Amino acid sequence: MYRQFCVDAPKRVAYSVHMQNDTHTPSDADIVRQVVTGNVNAFEFLLKRYQGLVLRIVNSHLPNHEVEETIQDVFVRAYRSLPTFKGSGDFSHWLASIAVRTCYDYWRKAYRAREIPLCELTDRHQQWLENVMSKQSEELSAPKGYRSEAGEVLDWALARLPAEDRMVLELVYFEGLSVKEAAKLLGWSAANVKVRSFRARKKLEKTLKSMILKQSGGDTHENS
Amino acid sequence: MRTLEYRLEALKKILLQAYHQKEKLELGDQWHMNVMGRVRRLGPLQARPDPLMQFGQFVWRLTPVTCLLIIMSAAVLLKFDFTPDYNVLISFITDVEEISLAQLLPL
Image 1 (cartoon, rainbow over the protein chains, first blue to last red):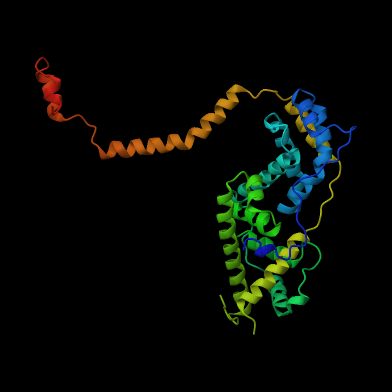
Image 2 (cartoon, rainbow over the protein chains, first blue to last red; image 1 turned 90 degrees about the vertical axis):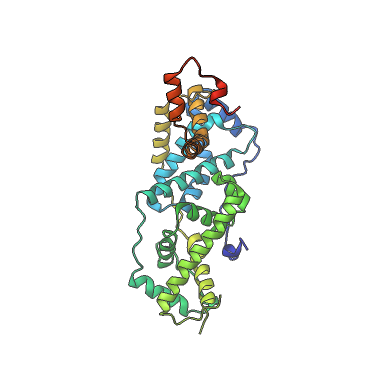
């Protein structure tokens, strides 16, 4: 049931990096130890090693114009928290968790500051929706490029959800993470993620349904 | 004529594709320097976390429990009248020597 939204998910966003064992490359734990004992420059190794991972995560959750600044915040936050990192754990998971929570914090602040546009869909979007609805299912495909109408409609629908719902929906339904994985990344209980993801999906479906009904002028059989 | 459920599934499918087709950003090197600049400004880390900071975190963790206790205490105070009984007060004032615990408590 929880995978319903991601049945056709083409790929899954990686939230960890598997490092190859190389005797010449220092391990993450070694680098962390160096940084914690005062070698600030050693942090650059971690920065270069995990920039791809953090970029992937932040890029998938935030608007493009916020990515660069947020990545910087993620690494600064990670640097500050390094003393709390337990060397026995996987550093990439630990960093991924910081990246996800930073994205979540971004949305919380944005919603609180009412920076999320809640305007209605334009005629262009309505036209796009009409085209989509008139196609056969096998013809359906999103136009290339995120700034397409599909991306804008998705942003519009997600903007109607609270920050918590948005994050959990993106992680569980769009990216196909398990409830346990999402809970670990967000630092929430698995039960909380399970309940919230279910409710968030229902809310999103309700928004999409009302959009379809509005577009079709009620000319649709509700079969639920 | 298609059902609402059919249209909803079609829309969900296309929106999911759009989510995964979001353009992948390529960042330059400037942000590297910015991060390292911010990190250097923060200075070397303390291997052992500051006890004062740890105490602060501990206090904040107790905040919900403290708030709950305050609310419960307030409720109890409102429910049971804690204002001293007027007669008891008067007997204390007027006849201090003869007052005893047995008189005050229903023993």
